[in-house]
Image (cartoon, rainbow, N blue to C red; front, side, top):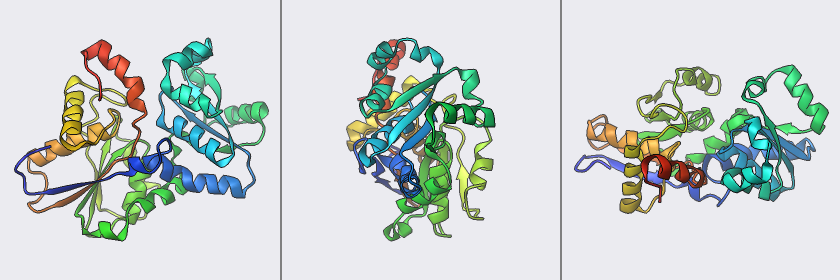
Amino acid sequence: MAKNKSVAVVIKREDLLHPEVSGNKFRKLKYNLIQAKADDFKTLLTFGGAFSNHIAATAAAGHLFGFKTIGVIRGDELGLNLQQTLMQNPTLNLAHKYGMTFKFVSRTDYRLKQTPDFAQSLHDEFGDFYEVPEGGTNHLAVSGCEEILKPQDDVFDYICVAVGTGGTISGLINASKNHQKVLGFPALKGDFLAHDINKLIKPKANWNLITDYHFGGYAKVSKDLIIFMNAFKEETGVTLDAVYTGKMLFGLADLIQNNYFEKGSKILLIHTGGLQGNIGMNPLLRKKYNIEIF
């Protein structure tokens, strides 16, 4: 982190909530699982990529709370040899260990996942299920994420969080006080997130997206980012992930260094978990940059 700057930075360790349903996934799934149980569903169905934190967390949460789970996974080639895929992919291997059934679909079909015909095909194949959106974001997820902030957090001037689908930051915005500014650090390229967030929040203007630290887009990284993350781990003992929290911390450090924050600002960072993704990321990092996350 930046040195000799007159700001205070505190990390809220949401990653420690649960070893496998951690961080914002715990918050997003909480009320969805309560609703599914209340409606007497026995099966959860959701969507994600091959290294999705959400897929792994849904499988683990389903196992813990007695649901069958189905994961609709982007990439039909992954289903050609499931055993090989499970050996090479720690995320899907974890989900499989917790009993998740996979349906691998082509990237073309995956883009149609919200169409009525696709939804009907899933019901024809699997019967009744409770659908959890990709990334877990819906109004129930936002309600869960509103519980991240506690009364003792009112002392902070800024609340910083990584942004994927927008559910976590929406909950933080709703729960924030008027004197606080919520800063989101998107992991994806594009300007669609503000529109999505506005559909989930109360009418509030105390938030902003910092869009300069996505490193090229979702799951795109650089050697400098990994070096920063490892140095941060050595300094603080806190592990980050390269897709979300690493980018947020990198961006925050840069903003502090360039005097973005007023002198005396109190900044709260939300660690949203997702550390299981580092296991799958490391082989790629070793091959491309001869470095790994530790």
